[in-house]
Amino acid sequence: MTSVVLITGGTSGIGRACALEFGRAGASVVITGRDAAKLAATAAELTAAGIANRTVQGDVGVLADANRAVADTIAAFGRLDVLINNAGLSMRAKFADVDVKVIEQLMQTNFFGTVYVTKAALPHLLASKGTVVGMSSIAGFRGLPGRTGYSASKFAMNGFLEALRTELLPQGVNVLTAAPGFTASNIRHTALLANGQTQNETPRDEGKMMTSEEVAQHLRQSVAQRQRSMVLTGEGKLVVFLNKWLPGLMDKMVLNKFRKEEGEL
Image 1 (tube, helix red, strand yellow):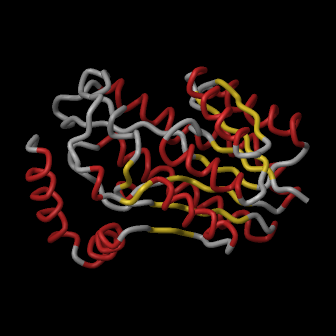
Image 2 (tube, helix red, strand yellow):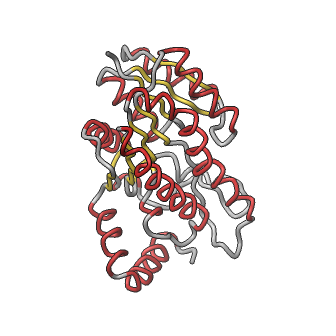
C-alpha cells in the first residue's frame, strides 16, 4: 500500500526536498504553504517527477487551516502515514530590540502550528501506526543569541514531542525529533528582524552547509528506521554534546561564534 506523507511548509528548502525525496521513494505527498504561486510550482515539479500529490494553501499557525490540511489529505488519499511538521520562521534580533509580537508570531507558527496539525492528524496516525516528525533545530537544544524567540519555539516543540512520544508508545505511533543543524535553506532569508520585517539575506555562507536534499535523505531513512531523534552535521552533534556537559563553556563559545559570523551582539 502506498504511504501518504503530509509536509507542512513544503514549497521550499527542507520541506520541498522532503516532498521530492519521499515521493521518489513511492509515497503520495501533500504539501502546505501560504504562497499559492510557490505551491503551484512545487506541485508541478512533483507531478513532473511522477509523484502523486496535492497542495493545501494556508497557514498552519491558524487552527482552521491546520485542520483543513489534514482533512484534505484524507479526502485525497484516504490515509496518513507520516506527518512532517516543517513549517517554520526564524528571527535575527537581540531580545532588547525585538518587538514581542515577532516572538508571538514565531511561537504561533513553529510551536502551535505543530500542535494544531499533529492534533488533527493523530487519529489517522493511530490508525496507520505512523510517524510524527517535528523539524526542530540545534536551537531547540542550545539557546542561540539573537534567536530568543526561535530557540524558545524549538525548545517548546522538543518538549511537546518528547511528551507525545511517551504517551504514544503503547499505541505504536513513532515520534521523531529532527535537528538538521545549519542547513542551506530559505529560513534565514525569511528570518524576521526586530520590527517583524524579513531580512531577505543570510549572514552565513550557505555553500558550506549541508544541503536540504541531504537532510531529506537522512530524514527518510530515520523515518523508515522509526528513530526517536536525528541530529545532523558534526557541528550540530558537537553543540548538543558540549551543551549537555559543559554548558558554561558553550555560553562563551556560542557568543563568540555568533559575534564573529554576524557581528551583531
